[in-house]
Length: 391
Image (cartoon, rainbow, N blue to C red):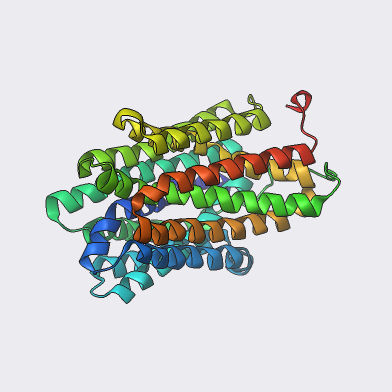
């Protein structure tokens, strides 16, 4: 027991490294897409196939991860996830034909989903919210570097596969280190107990549906913004590849900075107020991206990332406060399912619209989703009877 507790921090460092790799792979996809599209003779609507492969794998992993962890343990599930995602990255690194690309993204989604869900579970139960903030910041750091790393491989080496190959090689090393440390897993000890918290709402079923829909909209618009920003800035706004990649990285940097701030502030914030203000900031930045005054709309991309940074963790954390601890585990599962559906649907829809009307359709689609999402969160707050005194 003592050895397990002492060794847990070293295992945490390895899991943080895994999350950096998750971010590197995810952050580079949007930057790589135009090159992948042209190399395989596809159209923008084909990006929907990639979204389905990624999010479909992620959805299956989210459903299965808890059952798998019960059977083999949380850390072995993380190892399994990293192994599967490494296989997916390897397929992308060779990918001679389109179906291999799709298989690679499906494996990447499945592996990342297993690692993400299990990593969150292990850190939440072993350490607490501050370490959870560090975990998500690590993902943001990787996602911020992903577009830049991908652009270097494309611009300098004309080899988009190289970015995925490099991440695969690093993950192979991580798998070995995780296997060596697999027996250092500390027994999970819950860090927060909501006990018998009763639902604060009169119609918990309706709030559950609203929350699931909110998560679908949020994750859909988060993924859509990340994946289509580079294409929008280069093909519609006329920015150079290097500058557009830097702006896309700024989206992830904004998200990382916001999450680091959230982790540092801890309980000294009003979660309801911050989430509402972040929603309004996102809407304002979305309008700026669409209007593009004096060609400066690109500055909205990192602002959107900053606004988005706090939304997912705060909304997830409010679930037991709204619905009580006895409903939370089921509702959180529904939220992750909704998130996967949103990640599949909105980016793919923008791709279809872009084929018909050009990539200029992306900003109004993103803004409309933000507006609906903000109105929906207002409805959830009213249903939960949240008032300024409750902040």
